[in-house]
Length: 272
Length: 272
Image 1 (cartoon, rainbow over the protein chains, first blue to last red):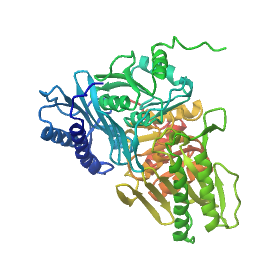
Image 2 (tube, one colour; image 1 turned 30 degrees about the horizontal axis):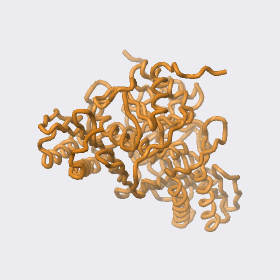
Image 3 (cartoon, helix red, strand yellow; image 1 turned 90 degrees about the vertical axis):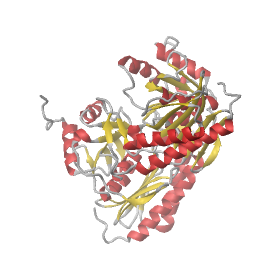
Image 4 (tube, rainbow over the protein chains, first blue to last red; image 1 turned 60 degrees about the horizontal axis):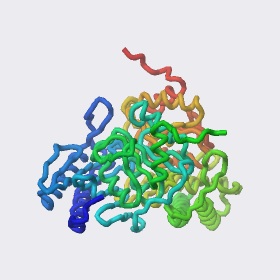
């Protein structure tokens, strides 16, 4: 991670202001009976009024304070910048959860330079929780207090808790690879969207595996988890900040073990 | 639902006091690094210190205020009463979610008479949300306000949102039955534990299907959902307050359609 010469306090103030602007919109529509859900593609991919309005609110907040930075989001066309920095935003990560009333969707705001994310923020405004990592910060605030983000100590894959959002993750090959990890760990849980990355950064769980991600789905989680001491790569161990298939792990040892299982399990010990 | 002659205000005060007593324990241990998880059975079924202490706190609150009532809980032996009323409690429903740090576990407190649950409370103390149904009440309180519980209007199965906790629900036959419903609905989501029942009572989702339940898993959700205008039965349409396989639905039409699919899909229309 780079970013040592960046104005950290200013950039964090901007990121938090953008998250606050999004929260005003997302909370106004959350659980509302009149919420519209349209279909962006043939599969069920809801785009709500809240999604579009929240992205507009974030872009307005960024444009006012950081007009030289670029912006890449889920809903609108990318805006090029001249600063070498780009904000990567997802106004509502977990739209399906959002339209179902679950409190585990989030607003994702990241800032990246040429090498990748340098700042990430995961916001869950209904609960009132915010997870922040990068530029010297690794912190959370929530309804019961605040504290530092830190991944949990390394443990064996057989003791690990693994999260993914959908059991039918990715392609059939992706699913088979995921299952090789899932059948090895202690516990698999589903349905948390971006909240799972926050739990990893909080030291509550060990692994998150997802497929089919866009850059705006993963940029903020990368910065949050790296700041907490964890690792996020693609399923081949390479950078994943442009999207694709992500493996987030609390320790290098666990990351290596999960990576091997994803690749075909060649390091698994024969039983008996 | 019965209970017209019961002292509703007193019983609700007792239920809320019991939930408050549990919350003091569950929040003290939630996301704590020192939380112990033991194994009750060969499969991973964590019983935490928090679970046992929270049940003790609930029982103490009930014993002080309602000594003539019985108590049935997850952790301790049943206590018989002489009033004809029994409290049915689960200090932490969704223990796996609890030990993973997710905010969608809950404390379940129900009161039943000879016919079934008459009062139910689902509490999520980390978020600060409480869902209450029965004895004339159908209400929620949360971090963003409070309001009435009411299920959403009837809709077709093909438009419904369905929740269950584990994709590997119940036996292989249970799973096949569940899949017949799942392949018909618009959206299936996982991992919410008792929070899914609250979402149904809030009018956010349409169906919850679970298997392998105990009485203490389902008694409170039954009262909450019935007070909100929904239905909860077993997979054959019979009372489920003693546990087993549960189908919760927002409307009688949707309940009938899901029941038919669970039974073998004989009412499904041929395509083309």
